[in-house]
Length: 323
Image (cartoon, rainbow, N blue to C red; front, side):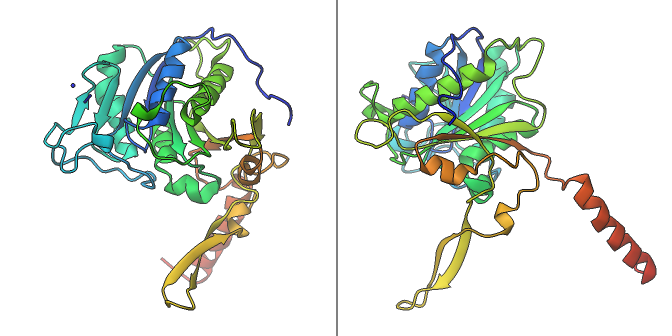
């Protein structure tokens, strides 16, 4: 195992075959990533999967490289034996690789080491990260999520990238997927394939990028399918801010230990960039809608905000003979 808008995007025929680097933070052996690999391959894409050897959820953009081979207890879901090399290839599928690093390090290993051998001189057209086992809504989780961390790392390297986070948070092996179309992993994978199709349709990737330089997408999928009130969530354009939460700490009156709860704070919901009319992704994906947010890795404040601040500080430095 280891060698409303209605439906925002109409169903399109897959006319563009992409070179896709697929990664995540829940491990190369998770049900979601393997179902997504199958769905993207079925759409005709050339897919290279390079995922963490073990669960790496919550690592954000932390960049940690391996210094040893695989240690006990081995790869996630017993997918890699103890003592195996720090990276390796599936013995039955040459498209599948693991790497024993954080998600950010894993996607870079895929970009720099594995992809050149897999795709040859052809570039990576798109990095897909996820679908995560659980949603990652708002700017706070944007910084904490390993799924999104791998995504913005790829964007920083100049590659278009999309993070997908699914409402169903069950951590399970790909071996538990029977292939039923209503399996949550397969439902999430179909959402991925549909959005990739909508993004790439009629785009000649030899002449233009799928996304502008420095830009990525983060997509939050609600829990849906048989047994849920939501069965066919439409795509809705959203922004990261708006109903977003950050952690607040209180002391438990019984134990005295700190506990955290969600706080819809003003700072995290300041709408400085983006499209003001778009709804927030947090309340949107809590309903029966898939939230699609566009982000940039340029974290500078807009010129109209930055210049007055610089001017005031510069004036005070000169007036007080500082520095």
